[in-house]
Image 1: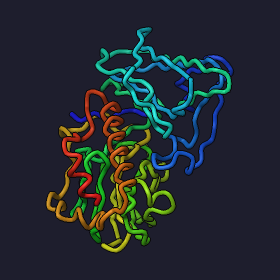
Image 2: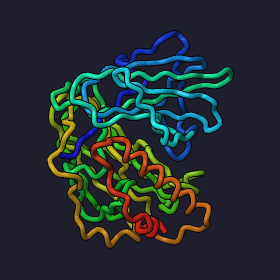
Image 3: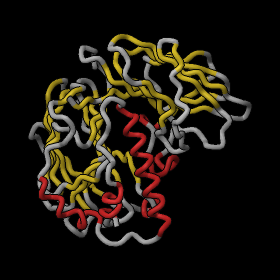
Image 4: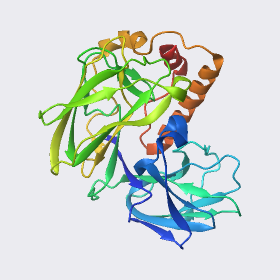
Length: 341
C-alpha cells in the first residue's frame, strides 16, 4: 500500500502556538528561489524563545521550514514528551527543509511539540507539519499530499519519469487522468533549465465538464540556471464534496515548454492509501522520448553541481517525508543526470 501524507499548514487552527511572540509572515514567489513558495504563501516566525504543539493520530510526523545556515537558532522536537530531534538532518535556507521527524510510531493519538531557542537578532521560521494518519482518522478539511508516481494516476503516452523529481511530456495530445475524493485539487510542476522557453498550452476538465485552458511556461530568469520545484500550475475551483475525475491534455509539441508534474495536493477527503505498491500507470514506451523532454546539452559545470545538489536534497527530503514509504528510489543518479543533459 502506497501511503499518502497529510499536510498541516502553519496557519491551521489545529496548531497551538505558545506565547504571543509568533507572527505570520507573507512570502512572495521569488523569495525562496528554486524550491518554491511555502504552503499558503506564508510562514510563522518568532524572534524569541517559543514553542508550538500539534495533536494527531498516526504513525509518522515531520516538521518543515526554512532557516538560515548562519543562524544560531536551535530547536528540539518531542513526540509524547520523548525527544525526537535528528542530529543528521540537513537544514537549508530554501523552503521547505525538514526540521525534525519521527517515524514508526504506534498507531494511536500523539502530541508533537517543537521548542525553539532564539538568540537576540535571530529568527526561527516554520512552514508546515506532515503526518501519516491512522486509516480510520478523519480527513475533513485536510490537505492530502500525492506523489507523482501514485499508482492511481494514469499517464498517457509521451510522459517520462524523472526519478525523484516527477513526470514530464512534450508529446502533443498527451493525457493524464486521476480520480480523487475531495473538494479541490492543486497541480504543482517543476522546471529544468533546459526546457524550451516557448509557451505551450494545456487544458483540464473535472468530471468531463468544460475544458479550462492553461498556459504552460518554460524557465525564465534564475530558472534558466538551476532546476525549480513546487510551482503551482493550477488549482481547481471548489467542488461538491465527493468523487471526481481530473483529466488533463497537453497541447504543446517538441518545440514548446513541456507539461510537468511534481506532485498533487487534494483538499478534504482523498484516501491516504492507494492500491498498488509504488508505480503510476504509464505507457512504458515513453522512455524513448526522454531526450525530447529535456533535449540538448546543459552548459556549465556550475549547473551540473547545482543539479546534483538539488537531486541529493530531494532524495533526502522525499526519504524523510513519508518515513515508512520512501519516494522513488535513487539507485541511479547518473542515469537521471544523463536525461537532463
